[in-house]
Image (cartoon, rainbow, N blue to C red; front, side, top):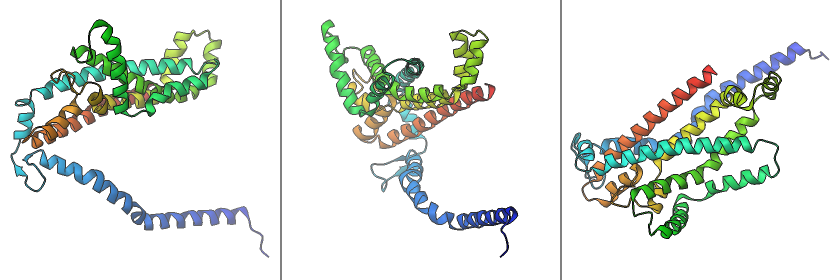
Length: 300
């Protein structure tokens, strides 16, 4: 009987791998087809139809009449609340992106130290993220209105109260989630680098800005992307907490689009045009943010 050599085994494994690759290439379309069909039905076709309908006046997709750019013009002229909603959403997103990431990173730094009860604190801080947006809105409406009642005010007395109420709610919901991402990144920072910095006499500030932050830049990119898109897309919390009151002054873009489409007769096309503008706007801002932060990853 012929002895099996290492060369024979290598040849066997190479042949098996080649055959497997051929099989995968042969049957890949068959396995990809169900996912492609679901993606097309749930996302691609509705997105294309939505883009087409933004140029039409309609009440259902069967009675659409082409009107050109009229809906886009009306979105900025006839409905002055859209521009107001944009500036409100932009200010809200800037504040929440900064506050959520700074507080989440600070908590992550604290909870990666050798202190008692670390796991319990991580669980407690993460739990608000598990609560639905509508429920969170109702909870914080009761809490904040109870606090403001001492000053004979409510969340709807002034847009400022609604703005900061939404900021508090968004922070409370998302800090724990971002904290978990930052904790995972900080724990993967090379202990050799930290030890070398300590031996070289680097203080805590130097270690933070020269080693830890550059090392966790991929996680910072992810967290910035998530908080940025979540801020712009916020809907259910806005609906439950203020519903845009007073006088649409706390109405964010997603809520404004919903109200335009479903609450105003004859404005379905305008609402669809707003949705297209909203999608392109969020995609563009998110893309710029990803490119900018990924450059930092390369530099560091």
